[in-house]
Image (cartoon, rainbow, N blue to C red; front, side):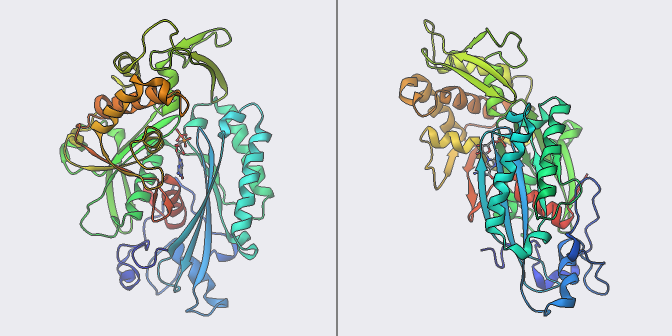
Length: 449
Ligand SMILES: Nc1nc2c(ncn2[C@@H]2O[C@H](COP(=O)(O)OP(=O)(O)O)[C@@H](O)[C@H]2O)c(=O)[nH]1
């Protein structure tokens, strides 16, 4: 539970009147369910978004009663679809709600695998909505917003196929008993994906309340794209970054200026195919794509998005870390921008596939996560690549993935060997993902510009 420390606000309830109303944003959905849609609270603290909900309920509930409400966020990723059901408690009508807990469930493959059969894709959403029905009490269904945001998988599909999938999801939502805001189903842009994951992690770690402006950076490695986001300490980082890598947004009465970028095609699965020279290639029916990053006798069909590729090791050639590093470089060199200050001593939280691969290779414990340095990924990558048969049963791509992660961190972002990575799946039992930040955005008017 998140009483006290995990309030929305850096000031908690007592300082609420010092809040000005966050500016209403234009680019993201922000509506309240029908019965709870309140007029601006007049005379009270000027807060828009969630606190209005409580204002609306004053008429038919005792003023001091705690109210519980829910938010449902779907993460339609390239490798899977996940549902996050958040339960919030509104302790008093004018105070800020508190995140009580999260229910999480995931299915594979992702929506993009259903590019040619959207109805079947919609079925996976129906399945996940059943989890929401089991978790959320029936009387709350009509007040509970359901929102789906898609990431790299749908960004990479031809627009008409992506649209057919989103239309199907919207139909499934409309048939459900939940509240469906307009624009409830969309493809999220990479900048928001980075910002919202940063918001989640800094909220859960308590950095958003501390007035110190001390925050942590985040590294998110998906199947199709990868994101880096941090609050620059040095003006030079901002000045030397490509302008589109600097994003400003308002939250809790503060304006933040973040360095953030999402590299489409640099997620771990897309990077595998690019390393193999298979992304964008023709002749997929007959070509076999080979790599020295794979066990020599390995051969498999790999599906990503709506395409299938034949891949294999090099049966009578060499395999190992050095050759593999050379191969993965083609996915990194000249593509990834090195921010000025990552050579410093900042701490980054790394999750998603950074976490999964660290577990598979034995770098960290699968339940507790852990702290590693960039050099640990490199050392373990070498071990995995030089003992491919040992790790083959766990994951035949482990050498390629670990080598890619090492290359991305060092050659790509330019991290030092000694840079500390906090590998985290959950903070206080809540998943580290952009989904919580996106739910806040929906409920609370983050203003991203
Ligand atoms: N534990 C956990 N893992 C997540 C969550 N969201 C995404 N992931 C992980 O993120 C990785 C896949 O990213 P995905 O969304 O498919 O790729 P993208 O489309 O490129 O962003 C996998 O390692 C997932 O297990 C989450 O909420 N919790």
